[in-house]
Length: 200
Image (cartoon, rainbow, N blue to C red; front, side, top):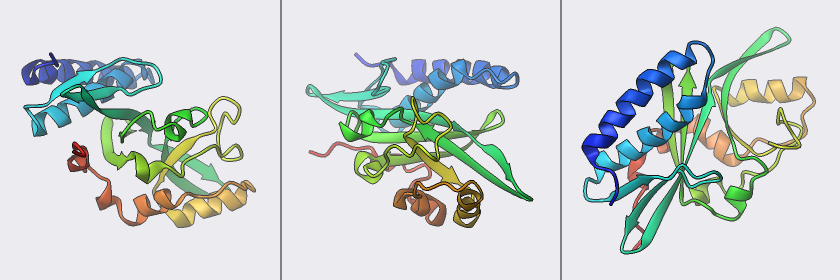
């Protein structure tokens, strides 16, 4: 059996309190567990009849919903809303990291939840289908760790500032169409939990 709605609420509340305290000292370890239970709670509240589990699996998926031996697989990522200074300009953005991109290429999940943290609070939660992020792949000139972690999905405050930042650092990797769409049409992704559904 999956976890009950009541238990999910209690676990999520406790993890949120602990994660918030630890974020004040830049400790992100509990943040990842909180984000997974947060996502599970959002799904269970909208679909009380679904069996929802937090897997704790490395390499995902992080949350699954099960029905008649079929699964909806949900990958949960967190990104810190960060300030980047370049020249006399400033840009804010957050990244979801996918290592070398195997999870996306092999379609190890059906939906992606990207929780963006600003300080100790959720700034934004974006929901995508796997098809919406299929173009996301390795960008070694844009990544901070190009050997181990070149595959990123970024949420920038502005495409104009991001393009200036790219030009300033002579970055040759492209901005993905999905990243442009997030900036131009955030309402298509923000809190769109209704995307997560059974296909049959």
